[in-house]
Image (cartoon, rainbow, N blue to C red; front, side):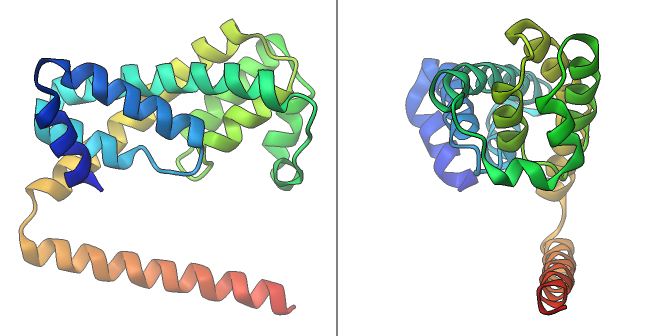
Length: 185
């Protein structure tokens, strides 16, 4: 996936930055595709610092566009998947400073998908300004950690990548096993 995005950036020539931001917006609106691939492509293509800045701008723009689209189109729905997380439930009933803090915390936590946060906020009473500011601030540390991790993986040797892949598969296996165990009980 990273190579596909990288090839798109290469073929875009002087419009590569705009293309990257548009890809980030599309990924954000889709809500299920990790932005990690765009971050990796940006770091590879533009270099660490510039790639990080472009990814940040793209993710912030994507969050704002997602919020606007979700609020316009999904306001009447109340998806049950949002009721599984106490923070997302709480967010739906807050506004102002309280929602600002919750959004900020949720953005920093790596294990809550951005799409779910965007959807929960779109259904809530939170203003777009509160959402954009809290999301932008919360994305800074999370994106920096993601970008640094991507950089380390990209610079690692093949042996290190194999070890990381094995560890990732092992963690995934444990996660799926535990999830299956909970369903049975």
